[in-house]
Image (cartoon, rainbow, N blue to C red):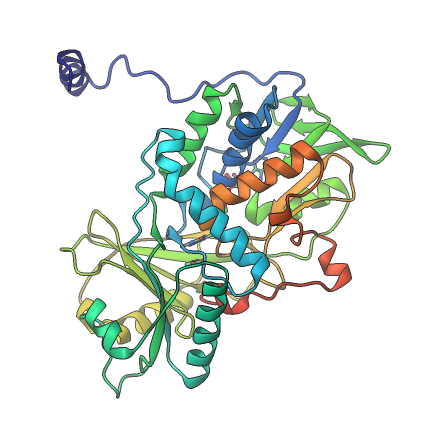
Length: 416
Ligand code: FAD
Ligand code: PYC
């Protein structure tokens, strides 16, 4: 470390960070852009970054009604993996995983991507058949996948109850060593700073209230900060995509549900991988700070409250304690909910729409955090070229008319 940076570190430590520059600008909205992105979550910010970086689009704005990453991006349990069954989904999520592997360097921001592996447990003979089918399909697509026996599982996670007489007998698991976790808010901040450096205007506290159209084409948006014109608009608002679709005059086959998560008080390191179980609707990992990060399945009702119901997490915690009796006396610190946008086939929409120049990226449901870089990359291509990339060509809105669904309930299963 140079003398200069040691002094500047000491000065900032003693001086309440005086002189630290803002990570991104906060410009007033211009009256017109080449592309407007609605939604300042990870996907929206990544889209803006790749539009500027890979497609040299000049004037881009990201409009966010609240603060960056205040939606699902900052509320998820940060699990990253690509072990999906069908080629279309597996290749899209694997593209994303490959981008994760170089992301901190690419955007020069430490997103703390930690490839500690992701384990998906099987509790019945049918679970094992599904797991082994998925492992084989993954390997055929060049995706790392291992089948673990109960003995392998016990060696990797000694604190799990793998004895025969438990409520949820552990009969086997799939394991993706390259899967893991990342720091979710850093992903939003990192993409925001990188996009800003490429000239993207990031405008917070700017709610889109209407989508302007003329002769079947988008012409701009109405916002809480006035009218902004653009010939292309990308919508990436997760749980609120149906609201935005209604503004544009069409309907999406999406339901919005609360999805909850919890963290415990910090404890010593005891769990160095991610464990998920579709059957018990629960998943758990330990953060670098020592907190247990626990998630549940979706609440069964639809709604926009970022809370969720007690009964869902009560069942979730009971299942986690059955698998990990050692945690029975750990105290939970916080609980929260996000609104997830679920499609009938548990796959996303990255697509053109019935309105020319208007594009939607949504329907990631409970599993879009892992897709953040890949989704932004593919959506940027779709907007810039007005045509999908091969990787997202199957994820159109049209598939709900044609019937070409991609059923990923097994891989997304934990929470849908
Ligand atoms: P968001 O981050 O929600 O961003 C959308 C933004 O749009 C928001 O900031 C919102 O304020 C803004 N917006 C909405 N309406 C408007 C408007 N009218 N005008 C302007 N802005 C607007 N996925 C995984 O892969 N792994 C996990 O472990 C995982 N765990 C999860 C746990 C929980 C509890 C939850 C809730 C989700 C989880 N997910 C997980 C899913 C994942 O979080 C989402 O799929 C992903 O973060 C979606 O990102 P996004 O950028 O599309 O949405
Ligand atoms: O998609 O891996 C996932 C996931 C885990 C928890 C919520 N979603």
